[in-house]
Length: 308
Ligand code: CP
Image (cartoon, rainbow, N blue to C red; front, side, top):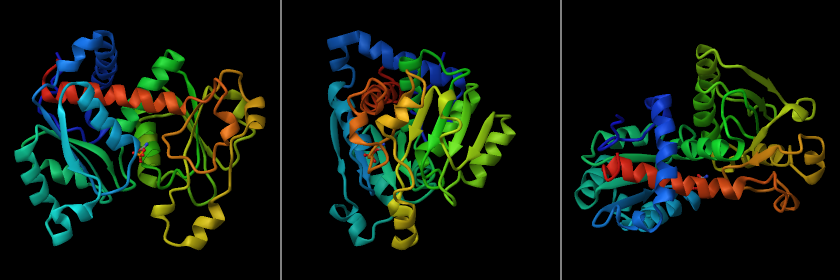
């Protein structure tokens, strides 16, 4: 029996592997319910509090709640809330928890979702805290890998891009390591995975490699997870411009890879995947965004206790 009702979702490290699989099964279960799922959250309110820009995370949380028959309140810019008048995170959360049954939030401060959970009587779901964690993206990505590749154990997954600041990668690799995925990191110089991620992979006994160039290992990979350079986290425009065009996935790249390599990207993308890749069956990134919506439906339903 898994206990999700009333629970905060801050870090996937708080979830057992069985709980992760149960979330994936629940996403499938909701899909199989068809129209019956439309009443699951009737009368419930989701608050989306986004202090940072978002398209997929905020809108898929909101779409998830509407598809479950619930309602949504919230803000997508701090300046449209009383934060602009100096209200603290704790006071904002404590207040919004009076008006809602569950809160999904994104904030630039690392650890902000954990701090918010301490002031909330309703479940807090972390939609991204600075360059730190992005657990709902990770859970959607695991769901994507299982649906597209049929397994996690033994998969060879490459991660290409800004691995220093990319919170999606920081969260995902630590979870995939627990499922026996082989990890290969390809980062421009100076944008390697942070020490705390590397240390936790070593501690977990994960199989991983680090290099700057993709070419030599590309033919082995089952999946390539690409990320953009996280411009908003750079200290200088000059440094960002130096790194900006370090890599690009094109149809030519696909010719050097396995026929069925799956290309994923948490999105938004800039120029790191050419649009010519989009029509190929290898391009999984928009399907990935849809799996993310289904996973968020599962999370909302379980944390509210309307499914168990
Ligand atoms: N993947 C992701 O977090 O996208 P958004 O920033 O648009 O929410």
